[in-house]
Length: 177
Figure 1: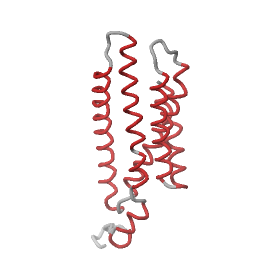
Figure 2 (figure 1 turned 90 degrees about the horizontal axis):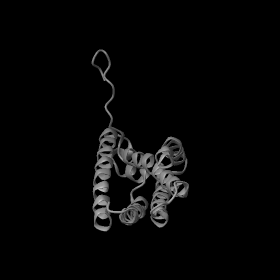
Figure 3 (figure 1 turned 180 degrees about the vertical axis):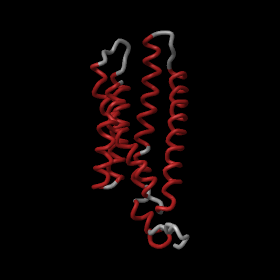
Figure 4 (figure 1 turned 90 degrees about the vertical axis):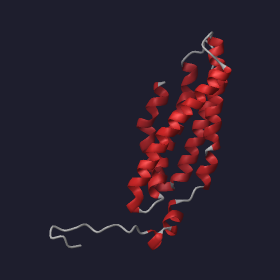
């Protein structure tokens, strides 16, 4: 699992840097494709008695994918609103990301329970395979909204003052603006 959970330390900053150059859409879309592909790859290879080295590449692909999605999702959320609303956008993004993770785990647990169980290794792997298929399908389904959402330029152009946030000027020591 370290291959999956360790990838954000390296690839999240790289994804953010690449997104700054080419935009969030291509990086987010690529990340979702990698994440979904990695989960589906895991679903294909997972079976009772499989060795860990056989899982390293699918875990790595899914981990790189999720590492590219998180920073670009935050960038898209904060960058698509006027500067004055960026705190609200960041908070909303974090809240929805946490709620989505909670809901996702619950849905995958239901899928696992409906198709698997703990009575044997084979039954466990059967349930896990179905849960991975659902996780991969959801990641791949998220590609469409990642492509259809407004770009930062579109969102800022639609905001009042042509994308310039109506930020308050700082108050000086004398109370003057």
